[in-house]
Image (cartoon, rainbow, N blue to C red; front, top):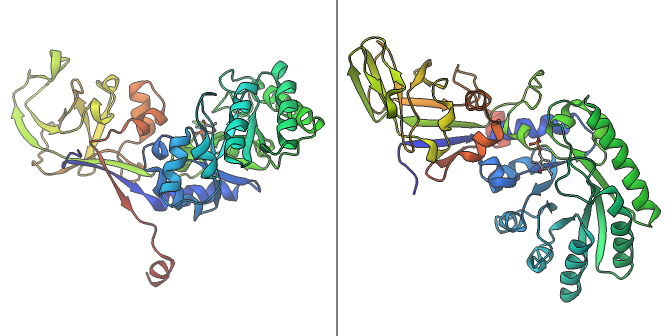
Length: 380
Ligand SMILES: *Cc1c(COP(=O)(O)O)cnc(C)c1O
């Protein structure tokens, strides 16, 4: 049930711009990462836009996310990368979803699903090169690639890719990155030695795609950058923020100096003030921890969030400025009109922009600002 008073406007032109920016910085294919409902922007809309703007692959976490894209009419190659070995992979295989595999047990399960269906599973073997989450450890790798080679010969699997994920999302010069690349190259060599012929190798996330060209291989996997968040805090690559979170003020009132605002009265007005009520709270993804620092924009000016952010609402102190119920407040946006950005909200809350974007809750309806059709654009 969406609140009628707030919406997240997704600028598909920004997604298109950002995808093209990534594609323009590499000769590799671009796998647009649209997990977690396209980082909260709507997976199918983002996927379709990215595919029209230079991406050729899509990356998601679960097979359910991959099947959701297929149901939305997306026919491009999709890689799904997090499963339990006891999952039934049948539906994903019938939908031609590529599956990441991190262990021999997992590979046997995927092969068994393929055998039952009389099909061949396309898999990407994942090497743990140091992140120590998913992926096979170096000492498990030889067994995994030898099993994969045997199952490939038997016709149950086809090893399309070998891949890994990087430790450091922001510093491409870090020693861990160099060590990971070295271990990755060794892992690929062991796979080839076992007779595998992977067409694609991939490790690069957004920041590596922009800043570390030697990590590109055949595919890069940008996520956060597609949505317009600069992934390297020290550099500006020209990405455009795609989501603007807007709401309408639902009440404006005047209070005397010394008025405590919101739970526990953490905030007290220093002078007579105009307070405006915004109908969004932490249930809608605005972090409780951002109180005391957060700001929003009303009529092009920034004002502080006054006191605690509650589940469904927060208060803004307008000082002596005036506003009326129904006026628009911009919680965050691309920053082009002075409004706060997702990165600022993340800083205020002590978290990462990814958490702010994926946290925008189900009460906030997504609206789409379209990519202009070519004809319209040329007429304009
Ligand atoms: C989320 C994710 C990405 C994208 O990373 P960003 O830092 O958001 O660009 C790439 N690969 C994998 C495996 C991921 O889980």
